[in-house]
Length: 558
Image 1 (cartoon, rainbow, N blue to C red):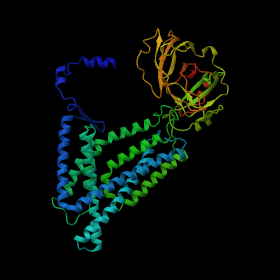
Image 2: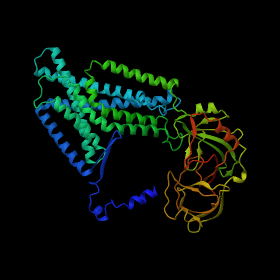
Image 3: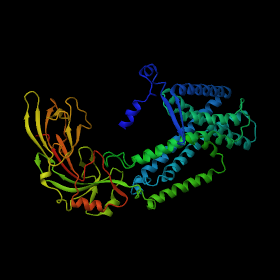
Image 4: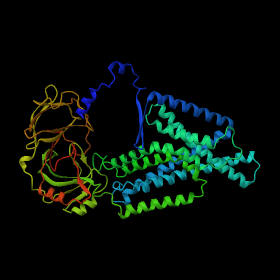
């Protein structure tokens, strides 16, 4: 990356500083998108603003003219057709999201579609489609009821003929409501200069052009006709080509993120990742199928489409419940961490004996029941033993104390010793930190009690001054080479007035907490790793511990 930046910065094609200074950065931003990953379209924000304003003004003029010519009934029909859109969104989101809440109950994994993304079509797209169709149909019936009252006063037709004309008129209003929906999104996107407003533009202009060319006339039709299929095809091809690539990439990113957005394993609800995917699917479906749905209410194939959608949903659920389609495979593995922990944390002012055990956890949502059954080795899983790794915490995990005393030495246990503690002009405490054989460690400092701190002789490690904190902790991560220092002198400057409150019968948070890491496999950890199922893979990042970690802490009442 550095080599690329140096080469690019020296390019003669870059504009000079004077040119950049004279430009309007807001209007000269680039709006760019690709069409199915093949063609790239690029233009300036200035052109996008002019184009969007022109389309918005013309659309508002057309709508105003249409409502003026149609009078009060047209305004009410537009309002009721917009109500059908609201119901479409509500039903679609509800149907799709409800599946996300069901999955953790019926499936061993709350994200069973990770290895087989096509399951998303059956699990979320199908119920979202059924919900959208049902919601819009309710609005369609309400609109029909109103139009029947209007037609009964104006037209003297046979009941059967009048009913058919009302249905056709309602169908047209639903189609036009889809255009009105995209006009609102275009106005909002243009006002906030959102680059992706080009999607609203194509979904508004192309169907509106097709409708105006094949369906609309300057004078309201006395006897409406069924919408032509050519109108839907002509109006949808271009928007689908422009937006398909973006939608597919966003869906893939969300599915991938559903298994790794949990920073603290077990801290977020299991259904959260699936709810995000379900909501995304419902939003995309409501936006892109709004024109199609208006055709289905009068279509003879409506029942067949609903039946096929229900079958698809049922088969997808059956595949998840039965385990025929596994949530993880050898090619798409579940990430896990196996850590041998030696815990020497001080509690209630007294030092407890080191507790040694092997911990197994995963940042992928879901229980580890299947994995434990495969590994065995005496693991117990649950939430009753949260582990604080300083840089993150594990609220749900598995652990075993069997054969946990081998593979580590007490000489590797880190120490936090109080060298001095004075309170002349504000309380100042000097702490001696010895990480023993570890050159990779993480230190958490309680910022509810400590205002500032510095490392004696190592000021460049943490500059003096205001310290940031997350949830009341400032975290330092250190990783050095073979000859990196292992002993540090830390000076703590206490806050003058601490307002921290501790509930009765609870253990107060420590003043300092330290984790030291060793890239070493103990016999127990090695045995557990060798028995990991094929669908699991070890995963580590900068905040994760090595396979051997020591935990210690310094209490508040030093």
